[in-house]
Image (cartoon, each protein chain N blue to C red):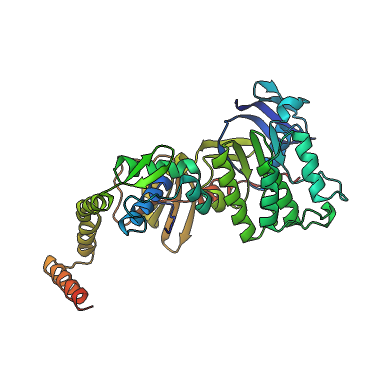
Length: 126
Length: 291
């Protein structure tokens, strides 16, 4: 897990995102225990209450589950749920930004579609 | 467990006012960052809370009782101060023992564990310790002593980067295991920013900010763009400072933005970190007192 802190977003959201990313990349597998708030707090020098607040977002989203007396575990199906969520956010996070930047650069729609095709071809060749 | 309430506290040294009408409640089980320029009066405030020096007026009430000469409540707090209160020939191990006896309880396992992690030889006499190891000795006591309020005045003075990291980890571990209040004054703001729940800013003899870190950060903005557009956008807002590079201007704002005012395409807005915020808030201030 790698925390890249910036100041533009509340810390607890960044904690939630980093753990989510680790689940998505299978660094924390489904059914496995995730590090405790104390461990994360100690390693990254973050207030434990902030870490807990971040984790609780993931509990609400159904990515993590609390097991009483044991700790936090990656919920079964978490990986699929994260993928689904990110697919839904793809349009807002990537496409809208892409279109807005393209308009600033006066790139027409056809040129962008061409570039997307080129990107797919290049990735296919790699 | 109760809070520490500071009411109408003022302190002058001769003609020189250092603290003026400070009103502040320090809550249990909370980590505070006390920020202030050199000479702002941070150490003076700590020294008055722990009854090492008297206030000129006002009072400090700990767990419902006035702190002056009150061993019962003073025993609930520990101040790791700048001053070195130990006899120079005393060995580190004896300092630990004496402090443990004075406070009644201290986690000696933690003392030995931290001493070995920091490489502090407990046979050494106090006078032989470097500045860094004097800090280490005192911060080990601060983490191990069984009190409800710990005041760390520049705890990392003279510590190298590795030792500072070790201290922050030990602090988080200790706090998670037994939540209690830590008030930390430091100039290394970025290093403690993610650990502190509340921020206190001491400025021009007053506490000017007393809020959760999240709220403070939420109110800090940088507005970047061409000078005319930026100044038009920030007119009437609480601009606390600016940077200028040719025609490119950055205004730093603390407080609400004007939600009804459209943001020009040429202007970008983002949040700023605690250190940048502090520097801009306090850059006008002239340090008037050194102790």
